[in-house]
Image (cartoon, rainbow over all chains, first blue to last red; front, side, top):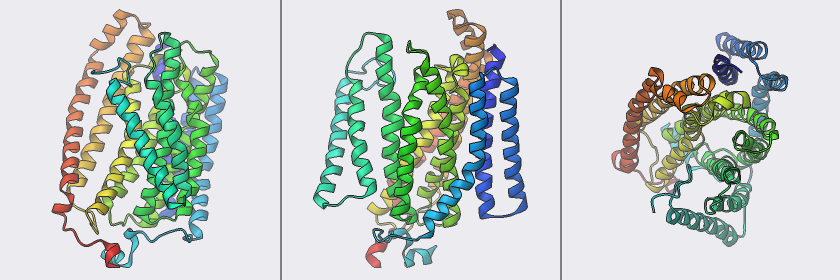
Amino acid sequence: MNALATLETGLLLGLYALLAGIWGVLWAVAQLRPTPIVARSAVAAYGLHAVAALAIVLWTPLGLGWKCLIVGSSLVFLALPPMTWRFLQHTHRDGVSQDDRKSSQHTARVEARL
Amino acid sequence: MINQGRKYVEAPRWAALGIVVIMVVFAYNVIGTAIAARKTTGIITVLMIDLVPLMLLYLIAFPAITNMSAELFWWWWLVQLWVEATWEVLIGCIMALALMQLLGTSRRIVEAWLYIEVALVLGTGILGLGHHYFWIGTPGYWLTIGGFFSALEPLPLLGMVVHAVYDAGAQHMKTTNRPALYWMMAEAFGNFIGAGVWGFMITLPQVNLYAHGTQWTVSHGHFAFWGAYACGIISVLYLVLQRVRNLAVVEGQLWKWSFAALNLGLVGMTGALLVSGFVQAFVERAIGGSTLSAFISAQENAWFVDGMVTRFLLAIVFTAGYVVLVWDVLTLGRRVPAVAAVSAAE
């Protein structure tokens, strides 16, 4: 790997992970506030993430195995936010268990103050 | 008396012994309480199991091994495994308890996520240790193992960020302790950016060959530690203060200033260190071939110097934020009118 490729590859890998994070956050925000702009921004973020993955595959001197890992991770990044969200909804659906004690944060008096 | 001469394990022998004593006392308290109560929960069970390797791994701080490769091999068990396995689980247990207190989240939910975290720590954190075995004389297969498992680490961190957004939405950011909630959110995002993004830049062996040991890795270390631990600890600190000082609601302006200054200072410092690290990887390692003259060239490079100066200036911002935080913590109950404990009034 030459000198410039070191920096380019490092930056592309960072950008790749950052865009995956932005995709995840925007996707989750879109579930809370289902407005077209947020949903489109999430899709755009994942699109840019895919472009970063493509750039890593095509332009960096990483080995084939690492490039396959990048592509595979991109597919997992795509599925991860919806999967996590569904699991969160599933675990929160059944309410409290009998082991729970009422938190001092959520008494009627405190909620009235909020 | 001053240090043991080992980087990252600088604590002098007397202080290292003190750390062991504190860990043993902590373990005794937790396990003794569980035995006295004749009852345990999933969180406490995980915590008790975690305390065993937490105590044992620190013992690697004591022996002096003269073979450099062998020394570094075991030394990373302390620097990496102690931090990324045992302390990750410990902070996971503490955050699980904090979530129950702060958001009233069901025990069943936080325990389910704690078990997932333990599985992910075992799956990626332990073998992710391999990225420290790249250039210390260990067999070449560590390049593959370390690179692969470290590259998987951003995945669970993204799940954590999605979880944070879910919790924020479910609570509409309303709570009686906003500082604790905001610092908990900062933990999720800081962990993803510091460990996930910053770490992913340098975790593959081809890049790490040039980046390891430069300010680039320092930048990653600062950001990841801040996100993974510091933010969570500050969050728990506010929760404990609320209970100890009988505050129904924790609010005010000071925590906002400290939150902003600390996070701005930290992001600025790590950004500046990143620029300096780029210069080292590029000029000293990739072009200069890690010679002494290349080292000096990189140290004298204007971008490197500017990066370090900027880091210093933003460290002042960070320090100011820390001072405000300390002041806020010390005076919280005195400035904010304390009322009787809500639980007592109910």
